[in-house]
Image (cartoon, rainbow, N blue to C red; front, side):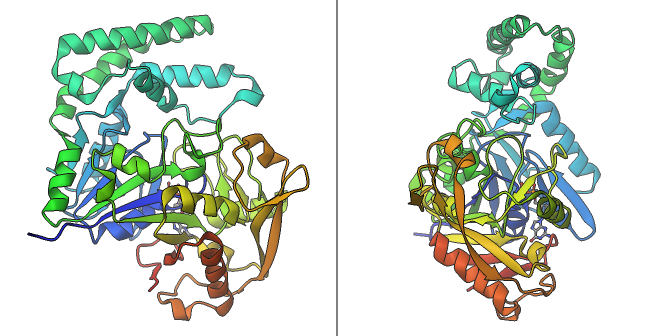
Length: 431
Ligand code: GDP
């Protein structure tokens, strides 16, 4: 019997934007297939290859490696128009995509009415109820999925059924838009025609991703399952309701691609050496304004999809421990260590002092308590030396290694990769 292939999940452990794209890009070199398991075009991975920058929204970052097969699993919500814009843009930049991209027959379609609903709902919500969505329709598309009104890739093969299902979902959303007083539905029919005219083309890429991945693993080929956003944005385990509308955590990698959970061998959690958050909702370890602006500039902390500035803060090991637990992390990939190179000292949150004075090391379920609690910090010395050129762990400054050791102790997951810059070569394998 041939040896089963390795199956690894890469998952974000903070509020997204941890640099998963870069880590997937590095690991993709060693695997045969990369698959996305949730999310939609709200996630943007930025990957640098030589001087070129690629921002990928729906197609897995593995696409930047010749010959790797890239799949979008059933757990994603797929915006057909945006998908093909991204697909064609990659092709124009010389990436050979023939036979390399597959889309699950079971993936949900994100249609123009979802996007419209998202934008109208968010702009008409009271300030305290805003979630800070990217306005790309992801939430409404997942609502339709859970409400069993969703339209799936496989429906594109049956025009009559497609028309019926689209009609039901669209009418419902248009009714709600009318209630909200939006007159923006006029352009919708044209947008729908444009999106659905690409249906045939999408069907040409459709695949049974669960079957394909399972067969590949049986055959000894290796697979990387790529999440979008991060653990704190998970619908169940994140800072509800300031979360995304899908499960971002590692268990969803099985559900969202159609493989069994026992096929997964390892789970790599990506954490920034500090913390950032875009959108609304509390950030317990937020920096003071000056430091916030300084790190945002140094780290280029502006959203890849929307350009929104990200709020920045110290590394929060309470959140990272929570992530280690819910994802069953087997290892950590620490990114953006280089961004902290100039600091003379660093703080790490090791626990939270709750509003009632008690101290806890557990991430609380009550999201609102996160804006009232005080992090308990530990101070570590900075290394005040550039790390961007370092390629071996032993060549990192002593204090940088001590910082990584402390991250490892506090999370209980071994550091396996350290990223010290945007380029592919700026990565330190550990162990
Ligand atoms: P993702 O969605 O988790 O892939 O994260 P983003 O792509 O939104 O953000 C990561 C950003 O950080 C991108 O611009 C990357 O090029 C950049 N990046 C990734 N790793 C590193 C690193 O180690 N150092 C620095 N300075 N930038 C990095």
